[in-house]
Length: 387
Length: 182
Image (tube, rainbow over all chains, first blue to last red; front, top):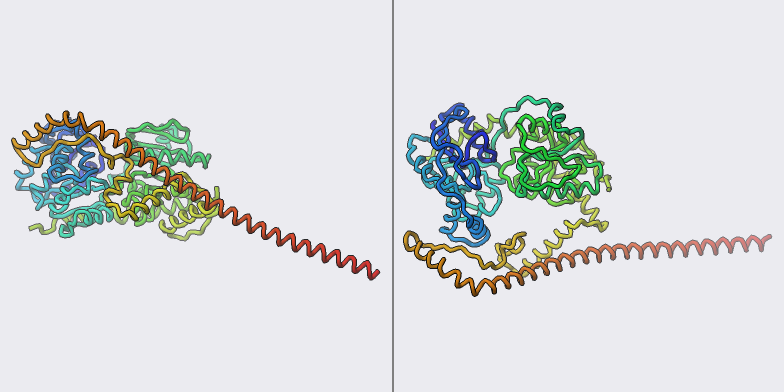
């Protein structure tokens, strides 16, 4: 089957949930199909500045077509976004917003229309201009992987079209599926909960990594971009409040790109961006993983923790994270400081509970997120009769 | 810090919801004892604000905006210039609107700005009043519990005093009876 994956950015240097998701799926699909990728030349989802050269390239056995972004965000974008997302806005205003949001790549859309040889298009991430326009052009033979979070963008009227256009939808979680079905009323579009697996495990020497980063005591771990929108400020505030009550609190180690100021404190350690091997080693020896993000469509970091049989403590205000914890019985969740404090204390006081949660999480991960299950679901979606 | 609630038995499997219930029960116990964090007071105040809004039957979308941390609910002198038309007409209309806007805003910005400040001030004032009211209600309930407990203790001590007095009286009656016998 000829498959073309469409995504807003693509490349090994690109850090982003949907982009990484696309890469993993495209590489696995390429084992049995002829897979290509259409994307932009941008590497930054805010500026959309063209960085990669335009045209065709080969990466990890995949043929990549890159198209230049033709319009960049200007100063009025924030005002426009605020107005459209927070107020009642018309269809034309929402379209102006979507164009400004980008990536505005008309050449990519023309390319999709020209590719009549393609049997299935797979679009990743619903919120971008290229997905909306791409689905308008070739929606009838497309699969959408929405990677939708419960934020204001989801409620824009134009995205009802986005969710009603594709031939099928591959949801990331039960919560995402319920949310999209509810908001867009797209019950007639076939769809199943698929999710994504993880890249293969690399060999890691844990002690070497711990020594390299000078970690000599127990710690909780956070993995991901260290920014406000990921709930990191609240996590730091809660953790320091816990320190006022529990003086023997373990370290809280952050791994990821730092976008916010973090207070200099004896119990907080920022390691910055690390290699996959270092991240895995740190995860293996952590007490538990803390995931404070309020918006997720599927947390791959949670899956990584469960692969290592580690319990998780996550933000219960995010329906997806709460749902993942409940279904797996692999972690606790919190919706306020009191719950955070008690859950953290329980994990510290009862390591047997923490271990059992981690093992249950691992069993869930092995059952639901192994690659053969994931890919058989994709095969099912690819073979759906879309005529 | 009370860790007693953490000492429960577990089997071969563990249910996250059951643990969460235990966590919530432990928090409820603390709150019964009058131990509230700033956040739980905020939550109670928030639910009170929600209750007022529901009674007033406010549009849910507006309510969501009123409760959001940004000030998107407030009036603002800034606005976008758009047109539902397309092509040259749209361009001309937008250009005209852009030319007229500075003159309009010369007269309206000051008024809108002041009104926005007043709105913000009242919203801040009312929110803090509800929060203070909640705090006072919690203090009031806590003091009431304490008074009740003191009242019960007082009754118990009075009863104890009466019993002791009776015992002393009984003993002294017994002693005087003995001395009469001797």
